[in-house]
Image (tube, rainbow, N blue to C red; front, side):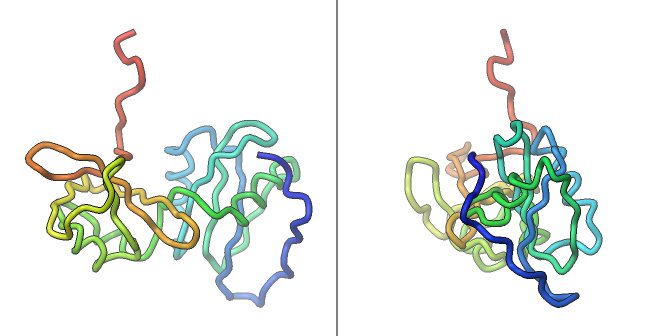
Length: 173
């Protein structure tokens, strides 16, 4: 990612007004950023993680919140990139707490702010298809909407593409 020249930071809104803010604390992993997001009280309405490269590879965060957060000057470009980004990985979003256990695609769409469920490389699933959530749902924020990417699983079900404990690449090497 390169510095966002040409972007100006909007004037601070009135106290208590929810807005998108970018935060960069130098989290090295998605799990670290997720943990920090889950520790916030009150919880933000929406929280997304963003992989950034400047000034070094790390995870920045965007939040829809009324709170203010400090970012070190050397991480300001990453925080701005997160705040103005058009994509991310949602950790907190309306309805996330209702996405547990086995749910149909239709139930996921009804219970949360997820706009669409996709099958990786396969398009849109039937609304009656069961998704085994594993109680861990991380949709992608793409151009203003949340999209849950899934992959086929046993018994004609689906599972979220991102799992809580992914198998490390080359685990047997």
